[in-house]
Length: 396
Image (cartoon, rainbow, N blue to C red; front, side, top):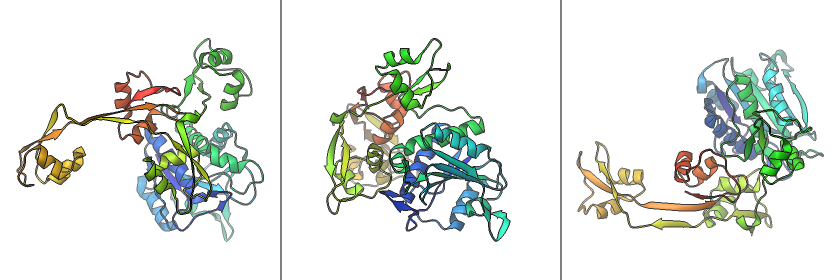
């Protein structure tokens, strides 16, 4: 069982510098991680999923309430470092060993990040106790503080944190899966390839119209050796015709821009690899081109709904995406009073989207954007797996 903890939040911004706000990047990492653990069927709870301030006591309470005082609970507290260093580090509790922490660092290093160390820290006034409350006050659980890099690094951490945070979050998910001996599969729908018997980097490069050097680069390979069953990331390129460029003006924020272009804020953050929701005047934001929605407004059939105790036209309409007045009009009702057992006809409106897959897309993110499910998209497009290719056209 896992508890994902996004450090800081609300008025507590954490470290700030070089266009990175720690609380915001912590939340991006944590929300991504939470979704991935759910996909992998690993029980998971998050301490916060919004920009919320939590006192140490409230944070500990949420951790302990998740699964109780249990040694089988892993707590991952996500943070960004400051102080002029470079690289990732993990701090673990005095009651635990370093196995999980070193696994996390090993997996993060595979994503190209420098590694500092895994270590423990003691309270100066009582060296029998942990320095950090997240270790000291969380009972029997196994908490780790993951510092992904320094936002004031003189090295390459700043760009890595902005551009590679998803890879680092995935590395932690991978490490926890290994530690728990749970089956791990790459992010659902990601551009990946499972090495088959007889494969070589050369044959895979030919198959996917890329080069051996590019395959080695994106997978951090130092040799050409492969193992059967090994998962390789496939190189992707962003196609320039799939976005427009927007220059931030005074008064703009991500929410107003997202509303203007009818896109989710999370999509803007992911598409631009933004470390926070903060913008600056003159900053250029890439807006993914939205595909045209073709709606068939004349329903060809209807759904019959049997009214149950406690239901109203408002609650039924909300369930099916209609207003109470629309349901009254469709059913020729003279009032909004309903009786138990009454049958309402619900218009079955069909809508479809043609969507062109872009770099970084996966079935999960597309389904979330269009409020449908992965299974529905696979069924509609006769897909045999979750793998997608750039330029592939899906019917949603």
